Length: 113
Image 1 (cartoon, rainbow, N blue to C red):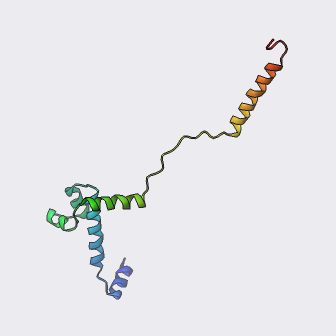
Image 2 (image 1 turned 90 degrees about the horizontal axis):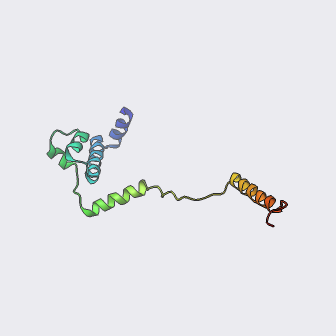
Image 3 (image 1 turned 180 degrees about the vertical axis):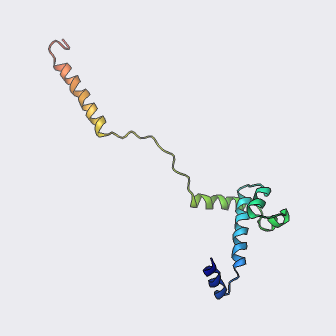
């Protein structure tokens, strides 16, 4: 971590801004997901609700839709499993045995007369 802070200082970047940015993002995402304010305060380690409110953006229907679409993009819902009947070598062999038995019965003397 110290090496990273040295690189930031060398580049003239204030590391506090990076930390604040991630806190703003976390607060906004938690708010968009409908997490209650006391829980967001706890996660962000704030002691006053006014502090937490500064870290969140509003929840409009457009932002909710954008968050949903972003979530769908990064974590798509699995396709529903469709039941398919795949014939296996075992089931083909069992079917062939049944056909042979039926043919053998049909050929047996006295059958079908």
